[in-house]
Image 1 (cartoon, rainbow, N blue to C red):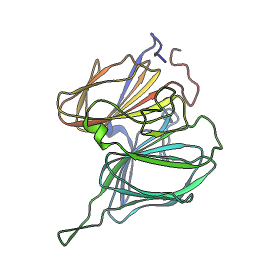
Image 2: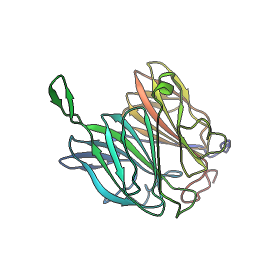
Image 3: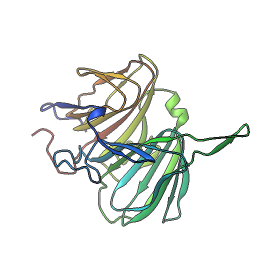
Image 4: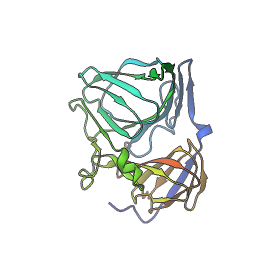
Amino acid sequence: MSAPPHRRRVEVRRAAGRFATQLTWLDSHHSFSFGPHWDPNNTHFGLLVVSNDDIVQPATGFDNHPHRDMEIVTWVLQGSLVHQDSEGHSGVIYPGLAQRMSAGTGILHSEKNDAWKLTGGQIHSDPVRFIQMWVAPDENGIEPGYEQMEIDDDLLRGGLVTVASGMAGHLDEAAIRIKQRNAALYAARMPETSTVVLPEAPYVHLFVARGEVELEGTGGLGEGDAVRITAAEGEMVTARGEAEVLVWEMHSSVGGEDPAA
């Protein structure tokens, strides 16, 4: 699964350049075309078609809405999010918990901010911030599904942790499985000056979820910045302070593009 030795491309997408949806209860930034925000030249990278950076206010959220034929991974950075769906699955997602929903033939689900907490006799309300990522499945029309697993201890050990994967050879180490044999998602919580090495793959998507990092050969990246690397060669990422990154390794593309072309 090595990346092609030529036609390497590195495209930096800054946080400020993302599409934005701002409502009274939602502050959302979209790395790709989403909803009413449409750019025919920015519909996906590799198999990744959605990467939304969402902040939802307390006691609000997304009411029941449909999805179909998509593998959806949700990664919470702050607060907690309540998931409920039409297949009878429910759960609270919080930092360090990997969660996947396979939309398949069709599913309805809601996502609400579970922020009201009684602490010391006081009611506190906090926004929830999460990254929701969609990848195209191997095939359409599969049975809808749901899976979650806590991986906080693994993250504390440092390095890239396999959050979700459908790739052969990665299934045993992945916290959750996705129905896409050519993609894997990693996360890393990075202490200052620590490093991780990106996968060698035809398509690698790096997202800086928190803090600041330095990408070898590219330079500094801030919170919300993303980098799309075609024919990635195992570049090194170094934390400038405490940071958290999300990395997609992909060996095919929605559009069937040849990364070596």
